[in-house]
Image (cartoon, rainbow, N blue to C red; front, side, top):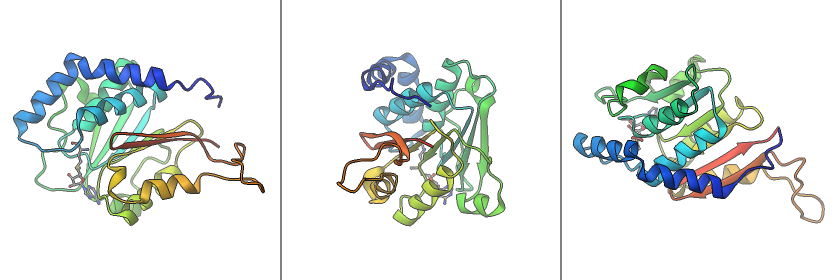
Length: 212
Ligand SMILES: C[S@@+](CC[C@H](N)C(=O)[O-])C[C@H]1O[C@@H](n2cnc3c(N)ncnc32)[C@H](O)[C@@H]1O
């Protein structure tokens, strides 16, 4: 896949425009009304929106779905790209959590809630075999983050994107990125052997686009 056209300005433009969009204002109101203190803020959500629109995934998995702030922005991006058959599989283990309750009704058709622990779904082989986009937002323990990154990365193809919230809460994201680099004998990055096209961090959100 040729991703030479990656354009940071375009990503930033779309994210900034979304911050002013009535949808974002409505979501902030909903979150406030729910009393939730979800740390997924507008900066993170709108970057997630811009990344989803850019990569146009058909199969998305997120861990730590909670009330659905991140879910709503992913689903809105899928709708704005007219990906009417795309699905968001959202995993949340807390029994008494109204999972996805912040998501506007008109965006719910692609929402697939999965109640349980990520590690149990993995052990049962109950997750999609191929994933075009993955968002980590469950436990932020280093070992758990690395486990999720590695599991879902193996199910992705060229051009797919792994996104992680709260990359500043452990060393996991930078460790994972480091493993995708290859260098030649004199220490220059070997772009053919390196297994990502791009990676970046903005606010608390990190992302990496896979290269095969
Ligand atoms: C920070 S919140 C997610 C916020 C959500 N993405 C949003 O935008 O509102 C983290 C969630 O991960 C869930 N969680 C933590 N560990 C988990 C696990 N192992 N499997 C599934 N869910 C988990 C918690 O119950 C919690 O609701």
